[in-house]
Image 1: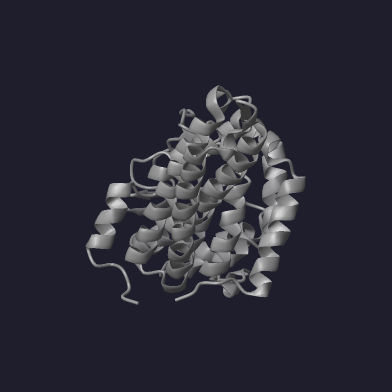
Image 2 (image 1 turned 135 degrees about the horizontal axis):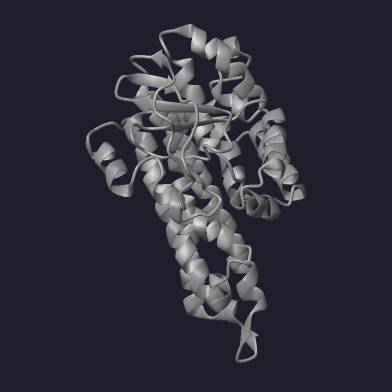
Length: 322
């Protein structure tokens, strides 16, 4: 099967790309890493106005969704530009609230998530929440159900400085005793896979541009056959992940989504290693923008399911047979 975007989807991706390019996201990422959320919240609002979060919110709650394919298109661009914030968590929260048996929490919380007036984070039982200090809505999946956490604990460090982890305060309002966790996990993994694919594509583009400029023995290092082979391997891995991503967005079968997640994240991680090697010493410096994507590729690899967990999901038979 061929998974090709139509003209409207390509135009949506191009519009997001243009907006994010003008936003100078590396400076936004560095502000966010320091705990300065003003520029990040402004960017969040612009992303919401383009309808990104509304794609995960049903129309009855003032959204436009659910549209997983278009959401995947958007998250590839968000990853390509290393946009910070609880992006995946907001999508997972929206998917979770939309499927609750009790409609009141969704009616109360989803419209503001779709419009970007609110941001959300979501934590599994005992796990840290991403950007709990910045999110306005904090959801915790506890042993007794889904709760609206009243606050958060101290900030913890992460592989990616822009991913600020916080424990959520126990207790809070009980929203549901039987939340659809598997449904939310599928949406979280789909968005993570798309974000990772975008990160990998950005790393590849930046590395190709760099090896064309860097010279050794009087010629660009990109002309060396060994360098070409490394870049070709990265390109093939990323392009192999693309149809798995959009195929999973069409079915939303747990196994398909898990396969897309592990493939995209492993491709992005391998591309990050190639990018670091071909950049040399400058790739290790935090001041160089490449580091923003390198750190994100490492962190996304285990977010919302390790490679082993995702492979186990695929082997359990949760994938659709094409």
